[in-house]
Length: 350
Image (cartoon, rainbow, N blue to C red; front, side, top):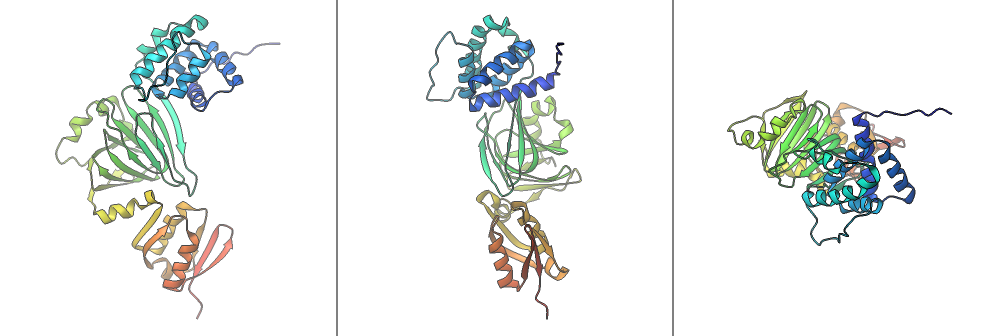
């Protein structure tokens, strides 16, 4: 029986290592531990990449799993204060030193790598909203049907908004700028609170509620942008800098003039963070399109006279029954469920 050896690219190895770190984060079964040891022994790069990822994870559960597989020379007890990345890395060095006897691997080599990766995904379903803590202390709140990819390196913090909308409360770290990539754009900050809504790859909105955010092309996401971030954000009258209380709209990959917005408008734009939707004179068709983001229900409007009605009010996200009752009471609009996920709106026949 012939044996077939599979040669993986570094990108594939990073994906596999990321999967193992995620598994260690939730805890490995005995069988998984055996599979992990077998995977590590297949290739030296497997071991290097896994430890590079784990050193950035900043999570004791991963270290505990590693110490359970490769006995430590010294027992470490959990401290009341969460260890920094430097302490986590030093613990990993002890793990690697003791495990190198089993694997024939020089542990010092991995700490000379220029780029370290930590990759993880977070997402919400339609109608779901959730808040996730990041390894650096940043908090990310995802709106309905949203997904992000986390990819931290030793010198930079990067998240990709793959779809939907998210609020980023960025932990301050002057040595590592924080960048959100969304389609053709990227948004970079140090310690800031801002909201990004991705409508598609070329259209999105940015609202900043604290600090400053630098807008650039995602293709320009290089080490130079990160290194020069503080200098760039101090330059006066830069059209690419969005400050607290301002909003930027990107249409067809081009940034429109930055808007200074009122507190009321900020509350309307970000009402989803409290599970609410606020309308203030939007056409009904536009309001219903926003409502549909939070549910599987869609609307069919019988004529333009209904579509162009101006609506205002507070609605709980996903509360279709409450919305239909309000339309009936205030505008005498009747509704009919034509299928499980479709509702037809019409004025009564005269």
